[in-house]
Image (cartoon, rainbow, N blue to C red; front, side):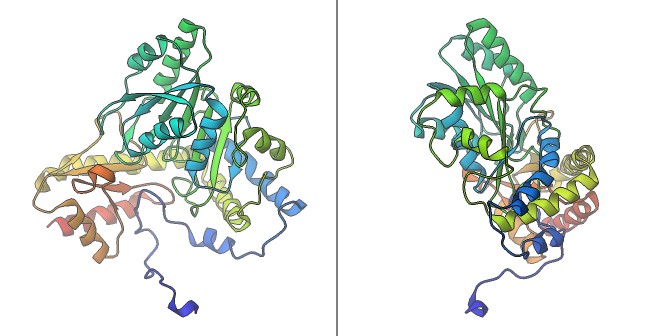
Length: 374
């Protein structure tokens, strides 16, 4: 029976530049072959206790980092159910911030949108102006929009939210999707005053899909205690109760936790700051290549200067070879790129320079890309 299952053709490590899921190191994949253990025993508690300091370092926080067996969308919903009392302002500039906004109303809360075109970032002053009108108790934002490669100015937006709190006298929680920023840059949950910050395992942390991670401020937890209808699977109060025992409220994906433990050792060995620097080096090399070479083939950077993500670059295509054909050409040569997402599918492609990739691997990718472009 197993001989009939479809399996991808093996490729050399370092050729998979999809902007999620990212390539997983063979040692981390091998860790998942360890025997399954009981999820209420000391072995699993010891495993989660061991990864706890690394997770806090990645999230730049002294608060707990909760581990959920789900995609990041699960904790996006958890952020709404635990953190929005009545009405949220959602900052929308791409497919995933669109999802966050939709979850607000799907969870029965009122939502207002602050939309900017795809490829643009939000303006902190406009965030402040919308919040100062009053009636909001939360803001949702995607820090690094995976569909466009735009990095929103999160520190400035966080400051705008705090100014609006002072102006209105209302508590406004800042709920942040850091799916393609956490682990790829230094996202300072504590010093930036983020009330909830989440990510998924399959992005810059370079783990298999299936885990989500989130950290909540004390005032986020205080609000959660006052909200009924938090749901069951993503109830942060329950997560906190079990975290104190280094366990999870529900049956965890034990094999994925083995992978997490192995990758946590690799991240600690490299250092979180060094990991962030490596991601920025790959991003800057990609941008420089597009700026210096791209015009030959009608390529340009989709995100504006100063607002580009260190983990994913979206490249606009206006040349003889369509974006989809560029990706197909790379696939034939054993490389994987990301096609455009949603409405950008036919006009852009994406390079996910995150996870375990190096500048040297990126150089080989760009050289092959030049061959495909001709």
